[in-house]
Image (cartoon, rainbow, N blue to C red; front, side, top):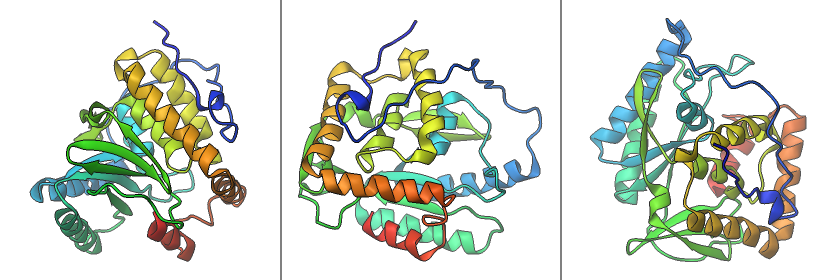
Length: 272
């Protein structure tokens, strides 16, 4: 069954269209035996999940790892250039103090392990407020059991059910993710646009969603998320355009601007 999704190009001029590629269905079979790199990375992932569990932090895997976990693909242990992929999480609770303690424990564990990936544990906000002039990434707010999306002066209430956690088998671990469609839209919600480097995998994932209606959000939830993306572009067009140019330049330079460990990488994380 094919399910129609409303694509951002229909609601925001600054977001370019993504056409699902005409390829055969992706091979989702797990390898019979993991490589040494996959085994090592899986151990690191397990360490991170254990620390989050020990601290009682409700965190959800996002980004490229989430896309692969949702599609049932093998663990992504190395990039094409041999570098180690980051692990990106959104921490939904219970509070900022506990989340910071878990992040500190992960940093401590990383010092004692070889090839430990860079781990981002982004906490949501626990107070409804407007963003600052230096906000370049959207954020999630939970205030009195209500959820909102925030980007500078733009704030949009969204249904709580889009934050439902789905447990997936990934690299021998049980990892928490959001639904497939919410994971997809988050790529556009970060800056009001997608990064050029993400277009291919998002096109493939879009095609996957077309064939997996169980991964879709409700029509009302989708409508509110799309309205948020549109409002980001309409209210702050120059900021979104600047971010587009930034990510395009980073793409042309093979990711050297935003590469993990560099000064600009740290600066980006500071304003995130």
